Image (tube, rainbow, N blue to C red; front, side, top):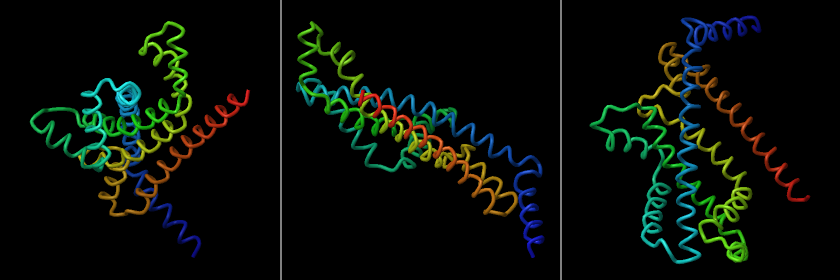
Length: 235
């Protein structure tokens, strides 16, 4: 019985991954997933920091009312709708009449989505900095923008770094819906193998394991980062 199960598993493994080099669907898909995640994180961080500065500046000084209004609409729309719907709208509506890379569309859609969450994370970090820091910057002869750049944002960034790292983990998992616009990412790679072999178990479990390993590695790095930050604060 044990021998039969062993042979059956090895045969299924061969059919799903070894035969016709089907494992390449997973490795190529993983590359696409990592590319989308990496560039979406960059876009999300840039947008998030800009929105956070606009909103925190308005909250503390009352300035930038129009930009703050636009930022609030952006946050409401992005945070109030599913990321997969945003992806579909971006590809099938916004870029419907344009010949454009699907990967670029995915990067843009996920980056815009992530930016909304990064913005609130960073804004909370900026608002947590005591107002006395602004006064300290002013006493040093720094104007508001310079005080934000050299005093407030570095402290806020340090405070929210673990939360930003966790947002990166969430974004990595969210990219699994990229297949909705026919991108051959990691999840789609597993689905392609399933459609060829008519065996759902092994390819989908393989996809789940790969995601799990990546998330565990990132979570370990985040926990290590949190311990280091805590150690630095005690000094």
